[in-house]
Image 1 (cartoon, rainbow, N blue to C red):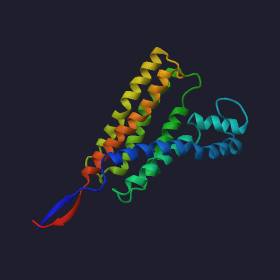
Image 2 (cartoon, helix red, strand yellow):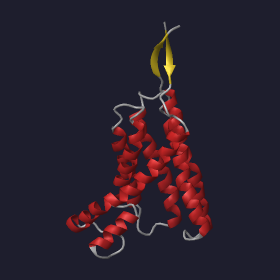
Image 3 (cartoon, helix red, strand yellow):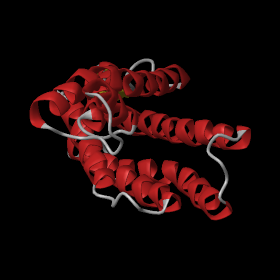
Image 4 (cartoon, rainbow, N blue to C red):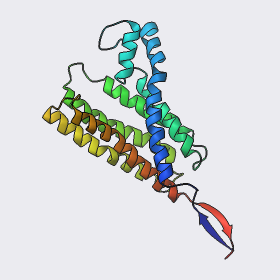
Length: 217
């Protein structure tokens, strides 16, 4: 009698596509949940947006700019959507939701710490690597000890954002308008590409997690 290793089912392109879709949908749903929280922060705690206006207008600005509670809810939305897929292969992985939320919250606080007169060309080169490192490390705490080669998740996530960082630096140097068609195309690609890299990396990592099953020698 020997032990055969059985791969978890449905780990391939379909899982990768669903991971990308879950990440995108979660990131879009998050701000919708953040808006009422931002409105409460403005109305009850006196939190202000960089641009003056009514409480609703300021809450909208905070939400659109990823400030206030916005990034926390973006992270929670992403984490929950990803967890719906992840928990089928990694039991008791609810911490993934909180880890993703905390990472995005810290990234948002880092962005909020910039002075109002900061050069816009510096925002991307500063926030992209910080956000990538925070997200990768926080999620790694959930994977470590449970997924073989979990440390590769940090490298994979950061590597996925390198092209986006390079594009941000080039656009900042050349002073491209963010409203130009070329800039919009690069922004879309630069946003989706890290999702694709992360999806491929998660498929690879989960494939390393095998389940023992008895089989006749």
